[in-house]
Length: 336
Image (cartoon, rainbow, N blue to C red; front, side, top):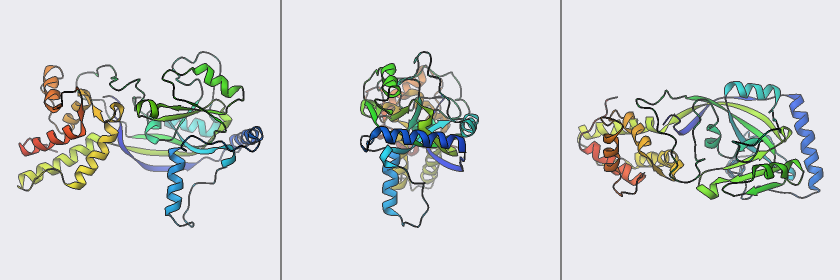
């Protein structure tokens, strides 16, 4: 609680950045990387989610449809996301990314660089509002400190993300649990590599991050303003629809479409704990349908235990669907 993970994003506005000075610096660095590679064509292991998606989309659409500008595969140029705030996005668009290579790497897992992502959900962590772990926990079961009592803080719906043209060159891959941040940073600043790929997807089933340590390796080509759509709100709408069918006498569980939507949303909502939720996430769902426990101590624990039919300390999607369906059948209504 405090930083719920959105179910999906809706793009509201896109601006292309036309900054001649920043572009010339980027283009110069791209040519330096090309010369260093000497004809080698390095690539990101398994490709990035962004580029794989674009390749699939191109194969399914006609050539006349507009798409993103072409990239240079010889230097491993890639589209990647960088989550940020409104003010920071404006600053980057006008003055470029800023890096300070001095000092300690404390608090930065892969060193002091520009962190980029192939998944918008990962970049959304760093946008407007509370900063929450969309999968950066060290192991499944990590929980942030207990949230304050009472209703969760207001949801921050609007945020910003940059779609960046990124020259990755030769990638230094790491799947270490505790990577040597200074060593990774030095491997790029020395010229041995051009970027780092930190594979938390392999380790914890979360995300991969790509990091560069020179601001001229990245050009912030698009600033995107978007709206977050949250799981517990969509869940409340579906629960309300099921309650109406129950009152009409024609409820026999969620429809196939409802089940598909709920399962898809659950995969995101339960992602930090590999498809399962803890009691604080359950509390958010109960608040969304106006069915909170009497208190957030013993009563919440009892409610959680009732939902946790497998008694493994977690609630998975099957348990969630089963209890939700039973509540509707028992006439536990949601008044929207």
